[in-house]
Length: 196
Image (cartoon, rainbow, N blue to C red; front, side, top):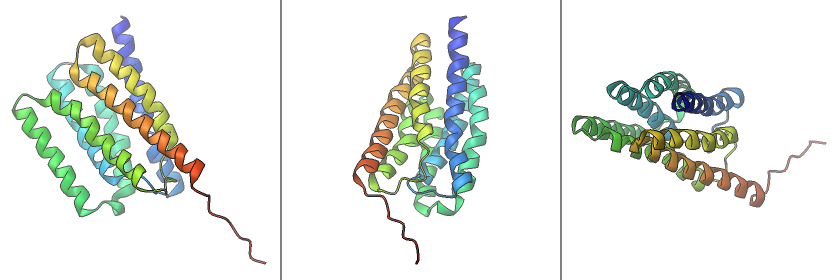
């Protein structure tokens, strides 16, 4: 009963985490600091988690992964003009790794690494620019809760992929939030002038 409740909570938090970023992009039209590669990799990972959940009969995993494709595809659609050839090549490599891991019986390990592949490009992008206005802070605050709930669910199941997901997502969230705070505190805001 408690395990089922934790799975439902983790699923709800995960889905809530996926909504602020595409909503901000749609509302503002500003993508400064947002990684198109992270968006592509997230869609690929959602599809892989869907397969993993189905194969291992984990409804909490496959159902939430199916729903995760919607905001993921929305984000990719909003960022489609910013996707580079390099992004497509790296995303293709990610697909090849997942397919190879699945064939080799190592999909759980690849999915554990998957959170590095989906969150890493965003962390790198956030640290390579001072222009972070496109990043939705709410995504990263909810990521802390997401990491905690899925990590706890993974511990309860003894599932290495879910535990790794929690640890890496937590580190990524803290890194992005710290970078955003540092940029706000140290980079001067642009000054507005009013024409006389």
